[in-house]
Length: 76
Image 1: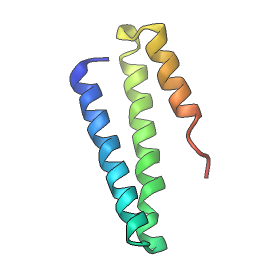
Image 2 (image 1 turned 90 degrees about the vertical axis):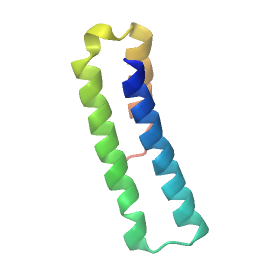
Image 3 (image 1 turned 60 degrees about the horizontal axis):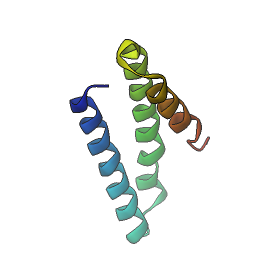
Image 4 (image 1 turned 180 degrees about the vertical axis):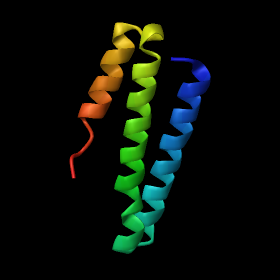
């Protein structure tokens, strides 16, 4: 996958982690926590779309990584 796309995905994931930590530290309400699974679902769908679109440039190890990452997500 192109480096710029990986960088963008990692920045989004880091922002999700920061938001989650902020919610934890502030003992956030259920309304604030609702954004986490919605954003994670959108992120997974976006990543899946990128894997399908760029499958020609991914190695088998890259495909295995994204497959393992998506299958390890908790199911709500």
